[in-house]
Length: 318
Ligand code: F6P
Image (cartoon, rainbow, N blue to C red; front, top):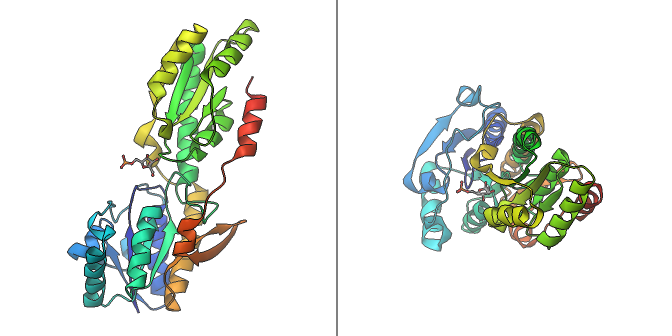
């Protein structure tokens, strides 16, 4: 058998560990492996590299993705998918492992339907893939954000300020709520929950009267109003406030143990499925165990928000 592996969508720490696991598992099973560069673009342009055990040595601890990544518009329509199928046939590929998010899995489903078995591995810092409890990169990104906010807290404390910190999460507040809980933030503002700046300000004023001097407010990127929130809280409370957008720093860096191990387990499972000729599945975790699910079913699932943690944060913030 000969299989390909690609990374697609936003990069995430641990993608390299997944590429390594796919490559080494395939070699162990006697398969040939190619790395497809820059997501589906590399498939369409024939930009592929032959991989051996040495190609992936020394990458398990590295952030980013050695295969590069991209979002590919051409692959969103059937012409692109059929062109991809033809390329797979020309290269003799019996299957592809796609490491990425929901958008990447749509392409994997279409290509599977066209006759090339594809297996998705969830890799995104946002943890916003419903069919899995955990996505590769999430732990590293949260720890990076937590460390950054700890540093911001030092300066907020020294100046008696309120720091409003925007963390990543285009459509999801999982990074936000966990980082907020981990740094002891006074409030967390996410798309999943209604928020009331007057109420946050009232709680800040009350605690200021009790002697509290500095505040941390975590805002999920998807809200899109970090400057407005900062200015409004300053106007309402009289506490000097500053906004910080953490941005892409959260996507880089050496993956944590959790991300490396998750990537290794999912990479191995993906190759096991392709070995059996199975495609159109996404691998993931349920209750700590690796499992797999039909891609269409995976894409139709809804992920619950962390309501309990949100509630605990509210009750322990002041
Ligand atoms: O999906 C991961 C993510 O980092 C989001 O949190 C963020 O909104 C987005 O990617 C940023 O994408 P880009 O790097 O293309 O600006």
